[in-house]
Length: 195
Image 1: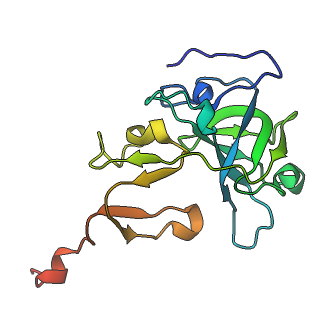
Image 2 (image 1 turned 45 degrees about the horizontal axis):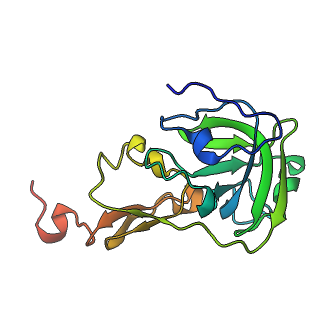
């Protein structure tokens, strides 16, 4: 486990410090973070404001440690009063936010719906951070979350051709299953079913 780290109240904590090199956040006390919005997450297609979004450190603040992630999910909450701060957030905003780091469903996040949590836009149209190249085959099982822990929440770019092989969870969770090189087929696509 990572030892808890703390920065003085009001000072900026970098995302790689929060993420640490382990499988859960290294800092669990309230933090202030300044980073760029890379994507928005809505709970449904009818939502008018995001329930959360991903942020990533600007390239200038990247620690260049391949074991720590520079991105993290920010949870806005589900009530209208919690989402008020998140309504004006768009991709490319530079934000200053206060919240509580933690893990939810095996994903690191900062909860800004806590008492004292806040989100404020400090600049617009900021260049997005440089995506990280993902080389396949992966160093571990692609079904094991720890394999990609060091790039969790970050913009990525795949260096090989990938095809979508499953999209069942796309609408609900924004997930797709990708396969390298070509579409996989069931045995029965090329062969008669055996009795």
